[in-house]
Image 1 (cartoon, rainbow, N blue to C red):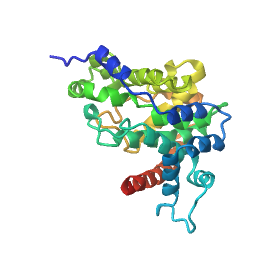
Image 2 (cartoon, one colour):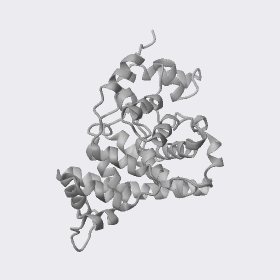
Image 3 (spheres, rainbow, N blue to C red):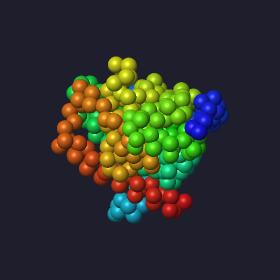
Length: 292
């Protein structure tokens, strides 16, 4: 007997999600503007005393080994880099969204956060290889948010996951996304899209989340961003930063070659750069968790 999952119950769970904090909403709007500047991020942080204290605590932590303490917020953000600061704001304002274990995926606590963070750094590296004009600043955020649907979907998916893996192994279902649709009526990308609409994300982020496994199906104006999220997601899984039992269970859409100059050599460079940035971010954010 197949497990029964109610799409109606999933949509109800999405509707019951609390709205994001004003800081996160402002941040996402800022990052969706290709002309934004570092000062725009500074202005989000400086009016929040808790965030300001957190940023200063991290930059002055032993991870960075500075000889002289940093007391200026502008200097701290400039030194940390905007991506680590963006990560701090999102992780500080989204509660359990990224940190909860993903039961249906057998993902451990913080698995989603680690996966999305690695994907985000990979996305920003992929963006550097764009063949045409591309909003590189948005790529990091798309990578960071691409899998948010798993947060809502995981509890519903728990009973169906073993059947999904069985069918994939037998070859009766091609990949994990198809298994989700077959057994649940919708997949985590569609659920993430519904969450993004609920939270009123900028349209490019909504589309990147919806099409991160099927980028060729994205509307043309959002297709490059969807491909960036797609490759970033794959890079995170290749690096061992997956979310559990769906690791490397998705096909690669080779259509990325139309938008990005990604070769075997540049892919190795992407992974190396993303890993270096990921380790730096994890070390600084982990220090913050320890001192709290």
